[in-house]
Length: 286
Length: 354
Image (cartoon, rainbow over all chains, first blue to last red; front, side, top):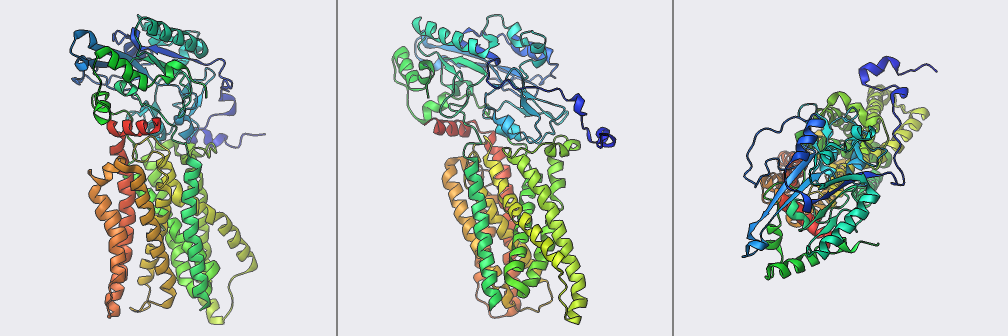
């Protein structure tokens, strides 16, 4: 059959069927690849930030001084896919021992059930064969829904091209059997990359070791499903409340209860419609 | 659900551990939470939606209100309400014209607006909305076309005392209504569901925004139709055929007020961007003051002069429309403020943790 859309493809930016690379989602998650970011090992060198910027050819965010410890990057954005947070806790006690400096390399969480993916109206956001959440920039039309759907504030829309961008978990490097740039550059193995199942086992062991050594506050953030959220394929080992790292205490899927909310809004409209029908019918008979 | 011990340790054991280490009990509640903040850096990304989206919410809503009124008047009211059907059909079509351009202008890459329709994905409210708007636009344009045909033929046929509607046209109208009414109901309220299906603290999972927008859609639709009829040549007296319109407008205001109260109650201090912040005047003077209070007051001032009563009716309709517009702007732009407030984000999350 002749391709009826052929004359319009160039104008409408439509791809040909044979150009579509079938990306099969790893349905059972058995091949899921992800990050385990162990914040107790982070020394705040920002090598991950630099490696990410370089490999992914991300533009500069300017040369600004925030005054917030050593953190002049401040947050993840369309041009920053790794961000090192510096949490100074000097006031924690009177003795010097209780003062501490927490560092954490933040990244897209690659949620197992990602709100950005659910929100995306064009299908630009998908789960790739490594179970990672991937934005197809050539499909994104910049509606901005994923930006507000993300409960971690990861995604931004670029002023330059009008599309949204975030960590791809170095999809291109993974395809070439290479570690993501940040994990490769990390000098302390604070950022570990691998199959998520293996990372979880490793991470649990690490928490137990830390507990045994007296670091009672260590716990995993996002390694397993909580009452409100799916597991994260990029999860963290933290030693303070999530808010201290600017993470939500209990992220929740925005779509929770969405069907009921549709119901309420349809009900309100339908009730007023029925009422108007009754009023017109009564008035019409007079 | 099985959870690892190391995860379940949050946050109670954290406090215990900290107490143990520093030998001092930490203050509980708000102050302790503030101490756990990350400077004043926003936790979430603010919405990118601005005046285009707010205006679309208003116009799309108004259109559905006018359309639903027009069709109910035609189906159930008969000839007595022909002018309501006529005005409603044309207003619905006219109001929907700017909707798609507004949405396209808001996009980061407007040349790809049609990518919204490359898939059908009802679990994304924006995708469902794009399809709904497309279908609804087609219906109202066609509906307006049928109305125009009827109007054109009407003059001649009325003179010859003939019924201008053929069986085929009746069937077509039935099919149009069968598709159009559900689409209109969806379009009226999905916009609220869209806002509430985000992580923005002021909107996040608030069940009242959808019905609030639905009720306001009906209210503004009724106001627009009412306003148009005032400028029809009927003298200063209000014909008895306008009676249902008044009651519908009142009912819409009652539902809107109820949903609005529900929204504020449910959002609590998360609604601060529109109750205390920059958009408080827009909200209280515009959405509540003009849309709900002023329109109710104007409608109920007892005056004898027909001329003054007509002026009051026009004022009531204009206040209702202004209120509907203010409501959408306050909700849309207030959400942008809410998204940059890390304190609000922490509060939502702490609430969800319980």
